[in-house]
Length: 228
Length: 216
Image (cartoon, chains in turn purple, brown):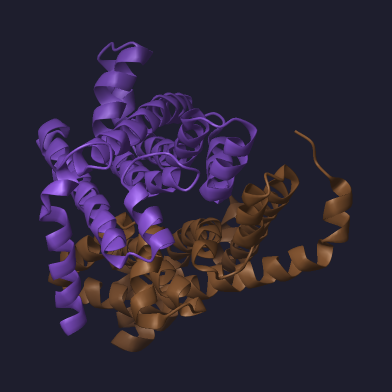
């Protein structure tokens, strides 16, 4: 336990040192870089994952194919992909592509499963009251599938925030810089400090999604959906 | 992109070795994770209050970057395979525990009552009825955990634990695309084969699902 306290003490000293809060190596700058990488990747992943998931889920066609492709995509080692495309073209774009590839599967699978799980009677009822297919999708299916869709987005967001640390290995910024530099210099304090920041960010993402869930999911659905 | 097929031909042996190490590093944690999740999931079904804190704890672990988690464990376990395997075990829990709980929850009440009426005790009902019915959902979780674990082990090379991550990093250091591609493709192939085996295991464990499929 002594070790643990030492670590907490070390990371606290590191986090509160004023030198950490200024300039290129400072926490605010690195945090912004990290948020930028994660945010852009998540945005593109959400566009792709939601569009495909809604299309496949609503029409009910190509479901098996979509899920298989998503599962194969899960197997692609992000680390290999990052290093490979960075070897071809050294810029942040390849890193973002790898992060998008990582983030699409959970969003796609959850959106699809969410739509598929909507009670067919409810859809028929929606059609029965004269909704167009578009309205059925947006006013009946999506609201009911929302808990699962949000769960998929949350899983992706947390994975992206945690994995964006890899960007530092081929020499980009973000919070991973502390971890990789600490590893290279055998500076343990730096590694733990960087880790603590990433974990805090991920916990923040969890809280944001918990709040979002309360705000946008219809109260009638909260009891029945999976409580995570 | 230029692929140097000659290099791949010359290095089949080392690549095979790395693939085997890789598989061991990736799959043992999932096995441990399953051995931990099954009793925990069963306990969560019995005592509902246990589930939310357990889920939060495993989600927090999931949020820690694998690289950082490996680094933290180096302090305690040194540069050992365990340093890679313990974090991967913890990651697998965040997928496996919810699936075990959901799987057990999918057993319908009439089925449970029928088993009780046939004179099954709690333990026998669990082993003979509830767990078999939970198999598809549990295996769905194992598939996700196994595939992600195989993909994640690559990062373990940053603390020198071998596997195909070695070739990815070596290829990057030498700016040698072939080695990175070969290793990445092998990782995907390992994941696909593992996934196919798990699907087969599921089919073997749930013969009634096939029978029902034929009947309908």
